[in-house]
Length: 319
Ligand SMILES: Cc1cc2nc3c(=O)[nH]c(=O)nc-3n(C[C@H](O)[C@H](O)[C@H](O)COP(=O)(O)O)c2cc1C
Image 1 (cartoon, helix red, strand yellow):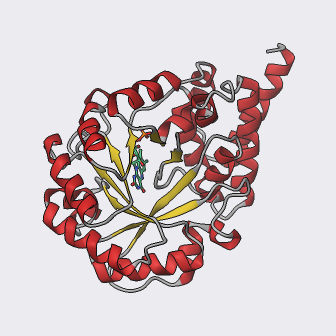
Image 2 (image 1 turned 90 degrees about the horizontal axis):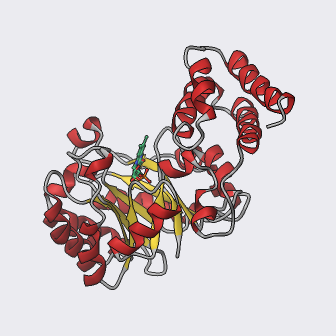
């Protein structure tokens, strides 16, 4: 089983990748997407999104990172792919699932799922321009609004020569509705093709992972929001660790806060931590109270102080 940490734009950045991969169980990370529009981006854009390129494309705990690209121009995407690989990316991932209106309006992301023939040409162009020893993976949803489209889309991607295909088991129109998840739709694709197919969507715990593997027919999984709700999720799925206790989690939050504040993204800290606490509420009922305290806070010091006090309180009451 291979577990990939999913790309989550604006949520799983390099600091979060660092923190999560250090807990074990993750075999690969995909970065947030680099948007390719009309000119070759400077090297600093690659490093900004993926500072791990400075260290061989590996997190400090040695997990390889693959950069994700988003766009629709085969030649330009190939140029960016080769630049990313030259700089240290472990292969390239192409985003064909992004539902953002802005991205879709510019004919990028999920909107391309309406055009399997165009996908075929795009993937073929890229594959022929990226040296064959480098993995070229593609990430899709089941379709724009019709989940049955996945068969034709997957055929196009496989025939065009991609090495791996990740399927987020919902259509674009399904958004993130949990009840819309369709793991069975992956099964026909994974049975039909020999390339590595990776199942993705709504895996929040070990049981979900096992169900998803069984229903989708995929050994390999990609998880995104799940690890935010349960940071050790990959190791828990693999059976090597138990979920963190609440106190361990608070220590992690304190460390995360320290890293965020020291890093160059400190202005985003209040929003980032609220976003994370919001996911954590799902697995840790105690976070519901903590989140309600932090929710209206605007400044970093008051939030950091509140988390530190929560940790002290746990020691006081001996949790
Ligand atoms: C806030 C957010 C940002 C995302 N950003 C990306 C992205 O940059 N590239 C991508 O391919 N998918 C992106 N996704 C989709 C996820 O990678 C993943 O497919 C989806 O969340 C379902 O998996 P999960 O249930 O394990 O989270 C994003 C999802 C969310 C919620």
